[in-house]
Length: 236
Image (tube, rainbow, N blue to C red; front, side):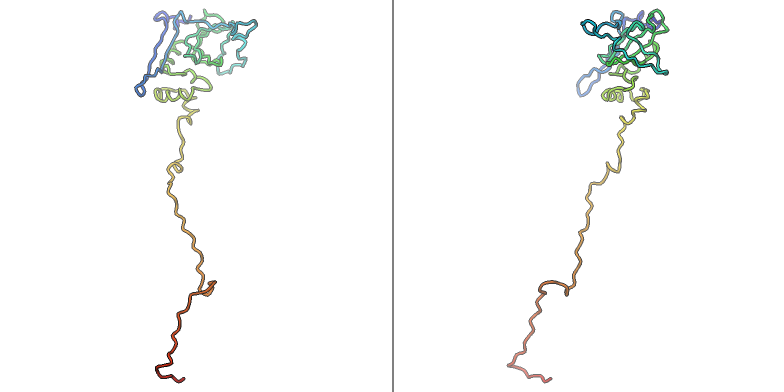
């Protein structure tokens, strides 16, 4: 057993701390920090998944993909690795203490890995002390282990992270590659565009001259007729 793990279990038999938040007079359990005690430090073995003959085991479902040069060798479910469960992550995966090369006696070959629900391995730290610091730093927020995976944490977990760890969280995959998920890019010219209707002047038809009017024009006033009974006639 590694020295830091041995010192931890000599001091305390496991660790379990939870905390809650109060929203609208309702208490909501949120953070959970767990390290299994000695009695719950169970080993993941390649037992059959079903009680049928020739049923597949965890080793049969193991990913045969080659490890990257930048990443350490992934654990194996067969005899090549010895795996102990440190935290069940409330059903979201498993944090495991992994002994490489199947020899628990070699403390320098231990690493901490996260096994997600799809049975893919994700490297966390190379020592138990470093993992303990990660656990405390992330406040045991839901699904915080998925921040160290290629697909990141869920949108709901991001909301909790933005509320309780907006600055201390330094994972680049969340704050740099996925910055668009936190910032709403708005176009001010479209958001604050005036909704007042622009009055368009009505076009007036061309004014036609009086001689060009069709149809009967205005009636001329009646001319006065000279009376024959009175007055002298005017010679031309």
